[in-house]
Image 1 (tube, rainbow, N blue to C red):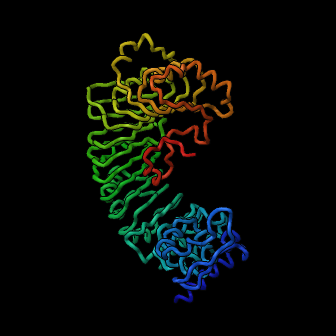
Image 2 (cartoon, helix red, strand yellow; image 1 turned 180 degrees about the horizontal axis):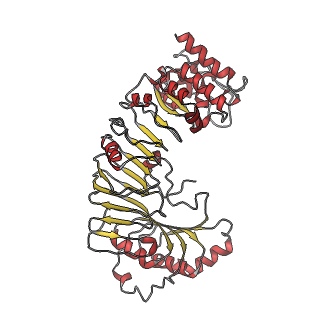
Image 3 (tube, one colour; image 1 turned 90 degrees about the horizontal axis):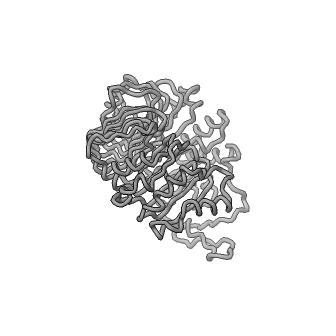
Length: 475
């Protein structure tokens, strides 16, 4: 049996496309003859002693490293040295189609050979949309491979599907051990009783066809769920109700949501600020990150924020969300009055991200808010202004915080690509009166917008929900 698996893995290396070919024979490597023998020395560089200390690590550590590599790189580790030849077969399988050649025939051949060679368990199994759509029988056969049968309770499975017909029945054989699941463009109506995942930590539902009752049933069937992404094409009515002691992050789009009891919830994110939706938060005492607020109604207890993008901000009671520290908003009109009202609602804000597309208001504040600046406690430490062009209304807006935010540590102005130069920066320093800043330790940065300039939240997949600050660009 072992000889058969070894032969299959060698076939992968020898006959797969060049992406899976081993490195050149003259590539430097160490090749100890036994576990107890010191690794051989490689050519010395200018730094270090030239000893291959990686190969001397325990098998369990090396196997964990291999399982985190892209699929093609993990397979290629077998060719590094005799010390590494057995490690890929003993490491948890990470089979992700995104690192394989795009050709359909090639992908089918490589995936089939990998599943035949590897004994399992599997950490991740991801197949491309076009294979799952046109080769459903093949995908169904893969799901029944022995490599996916040997399940370690500590190793999560990860399935990524897209543009599929109804789920193959073999999918549900992983219900007891599945840790991460993303369902995209599926008709899940009528499957709620099957979609029960006692070990699921991350669940993504993207553009699925599902009833309100079924969706609530699926969420209730995931008792240890921590990260939930719901990206729907239509808005549910009545709203989805969340009662979960384990949920830490929720991202949503086109969803009516009532968070009745979520004691562990830390992040509540709107994926599309252009979509009107309603969110009610009754109990989420640990909620720290909120956004991106747009044209929708948000209710905290008896405090209502309605139609923010239309600048219709209404507080109907004194109840506030005092736990929120990170806030992202996306508005057409950069209005200082609106932002001040938000700071009143969230008095403990430390980070504020603002994406705006225009400024109808002049944002004059020195006389209008003369009394306010004496009593308003601004705790903001970080402010990010996207789409900054240096127009007077934006300058007036920014100088309010430059002159009054005594705890400010960092303020970033994201300018259009190609518009940042020494002359522009010098002019803005003068207009913003940075030398008169209220916080002497504050730093100010003018940057060109990155490739994510049109986005405020950088959440794309359910795995991104573990990021503490989803608005901070990591380019």
